Image (tube, rainbow, N blue to C red):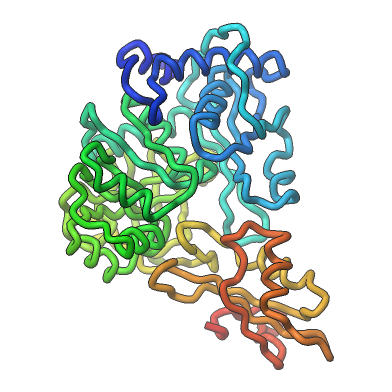
Amino acid sequence: MEIGCWVARAARSRPHVEALQELPYAELDRRVAGAAGALAARGVRPGARVGLLLPPGPDFAVAFWAVLRLGATVVPVSPKLAAPEVAHQTDGCVLVVDEPVGDAGPRTPSVAHAPGDPAVLLHTSGTTSTPKPVLLSFGNLLWAAQGSAAALGHPADERWLSALPFNHVGGLSILVRSAIAGTTAEVHDGFDAERVTARLHAPDGPTVISVVATTLSRLLDAGLHDPPRLRAALAGGGPIPAVLVERARAAGVPVAQTYGMTESTAMATIQRPGDEQLDAGPPLFCTRVRIAQDEEILVSGPTVSRSAAGPDGVLRTGDLGRLDPDGRLTVVGRKADTIISGGENVAPAEVEAALERHPAVREAAVHGRPDPEWGEAVVATVVPQPGATIDEQALREHCSSLLARFKVPRAVVVRAQPLPRTPSGKLLRRELH
């Protein structure tokens, strides 16, 4: 089986439908073809990797589809990252695109792809200080789109609002799924609660929106209620407090909880629209979810990245959960120390390393604290150097120069005693919670 260019197919079947707001598929396809020619002239060839350092929007979409059209692999990178983080994530790229790609190049034929061909390389922070690369294939993207469509339905007038970054699988998946279905992705560069609420209340508003605990809470605070066209507010990206789900449903917001990660191409389980339970729903039709003897959640199937799965094809998620008799998943915790704050993964060791680069800090420990808005807040406990004084604001500014904003601690606790450690020197973060 070969997979062609999904944008070109949508342009043939639904040329006047908006791919992104005010950009119909016919025009997107024209721009993508020209941009592919421009990128080919800059040395992009099949099999190469190309970094995209662009904010969400039409310019990103044109560059993204142009790279795939050439048979190259896209490496989306957040423009919010510090320079050393960008350099690390784009290592090995033949080109880093940090401004709009012109579409005046010669129209370039689309390369046909096999399902196993690489499409996107995303970086997700795990429990170590180094972001982990996850390679997703065209088959991963296609099966994930088909699985979500089967669970959610796919009406012809679907309009999926994304205020999520495109260097994350949750945001990027909306762009891909919409192109496969020939429907509209309404893309916002950043989250503005007032703007999103206004769009959801509009007569021509979105039918689906993806949210995390933080953004859902802010929408409700902004007065969101009974959005006229919204079929589902997909809530994922980390813990969603039950009280928040209940508050949203009381306001007439149809929350559908999901569970997944980059390694499973976003969703592994999902609630159907109208589902009133407080779990994460059953698996996608093409995905298998099991619970190991130690309660770790195991995922397998064609949405799972080969680069993340074990030799047996099974993804060991590091999360703990349980399945009810109907196969519905409840996530109960994580084996790893990873903090998920506002839908962003934060590796404590990476933040600790940044804190300990400050001359006033002798040692540091970072952990997550339950937070009603963010799901978890990043909290640091620091031990000062002898005779030094810790200025919390200066320390946070120091972290901001080295880390993305979402990784900067929201609170800093100064501790006089040494941090608790095992006899072998391993930090005991749980004793600081």
